[in-house]
Length: 144
Image (cartoon, rainbow, N blue to C red):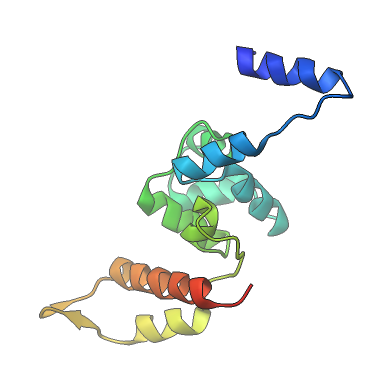
């Protein structure tokens, strides 16, 4: 147990003192990842850790480190986590508090369309990124 944990533990023992964990949440947001949201969504969707590991293509220990906040997933893994957890990278990163699944209609349209950019056909991954950007945009303009 490090000193910060010891301090929080000793403070929580004394009932007339208030412990403010907002600094912990702020630190999570500054890292660009909120592990508690991953754990919450995994349980909500009744997914097993091994299912997520296989889908995201990471070792169980790596995923566990994500969920415990010891590691922050790189952008490609964050996108895969968002897909399987039916949310957006913005929600997992703390940039949005809207826990909405990505729009399946938009994904179907992008998947069925041969899109080109600057003369080059877009890959599935690029189409997925476009879907995430559009979904993120609509989350920012939607009333809460």
